[in-house]
Length: 284
Image 1 (tube, helix red, strand yellow):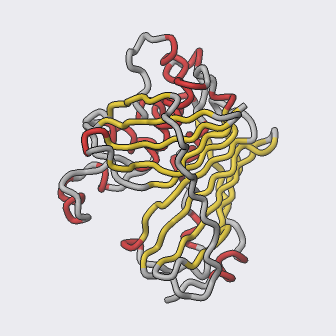
Image 2 (tube, helix red, strand yellow):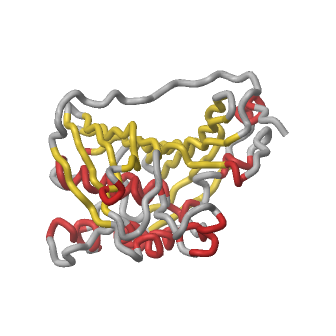
């Protein structure tokens, strides 16, 4: 059944009430590799409840991700989930996220783009509490074989590579058990845990969640260039360009420029195979 972009965009948003507390935040941070060394004061702000701050990327898992992809069930969207890839992610926070919170979250299809042989569906979730807006979260879903319906092609948000060496390059190891820990924040896809399922999907072993790499990268930028202060972050976006396997090392290159940090992430052991591209952190 072809995508009906007009029906999908016009559909009423899905609504959900979500809640989280310090344990959810700590578990998320631990799933990103926080807490090493365990007694490092810089790491305790991610792991100790009395000092806790919240990375903005937590918005992708808050409430165990209950409404993050709810728009995929909208009228006009009838696609084969086997043809679906998570192509990109962006988060904009309207103020620092609370350690404990309750929020009303809406989920809708914000846009559908026709790429010819594929479609890109932009799923938007917005959350607010009694103090106002918290975050706007866009997931770009790439659907193979669903293009050609005559829709707009959409923007091309590619970032040109800076013409200079990175200001900072850091490496972050991915623990062998990291996907097993990260999935406890709500993404139970067996692709990230079950070797037999991973082989059916074409991989020789389970792969790391793309959103785990996304969070690890934001933490690395925060700790390296933003003095570890998550409240300075306003927005963060990326495009998923390749997979990561537990046990590998992320090589994270950063270019700082007047309130923006452009980032690329590669897999160090695989000749710098691309992992995240078109990645940008906006900050104060």
